[in-house]
Length: 246
Image 1 (cartoon, rainbow, N blue to C red):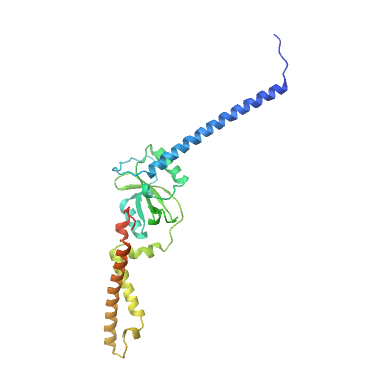
Image 2 (cartoon, rainbow, N blue to C red; image 1 turned 90 degrees about the vertical axis):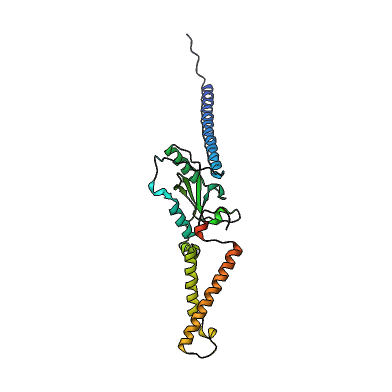
């Protein structure tokens, strides 16, 4: 048996071809994985964007964080306090970040299920195409009739004073309390010369102050009702899950 001598040039070419073939195979596998992941992301985005009017399915969670599980009463109270909306994810007009998609896929994989109904908690502006609000949206999975699991939160936090500003619009009781407090403040702040044009006794001053207080309440109630009907505004307890723009 006769052996041929080794040509180093041919060996280098053979090694180069082998490495190129291996690299091309690895790149092809990587592209296939990326394409598959991209397809899965698009399918998940389609589920988030597609309206689902069917009754939610009761899900049995295997691996979850109990601190992320909330009832509709807790969500309703928080939305009313900060004047937020809790609507289907199909109504959310902003983009879903990759982290939200990754957390959703991890949640579904850990619990061996497919979420059919998603919810979003966010300021009303985030459900409007023309606004540019970037405040603190939260993505929920509806896991039962009265149970929602917080999947992901992104954006910036709400301002610390938002609850204070939105407190008058929380319900009719906070609205009435605000008008009474504002009327009392105006009654004591407005100079007496603006109310009475001549010298009077203390009893008459008290009477005029009370009359001014009552007239102030009547004016504020009428003015606020006019604004509410003009701009079609409602209290937060009635708007937290309203899909219409108000």
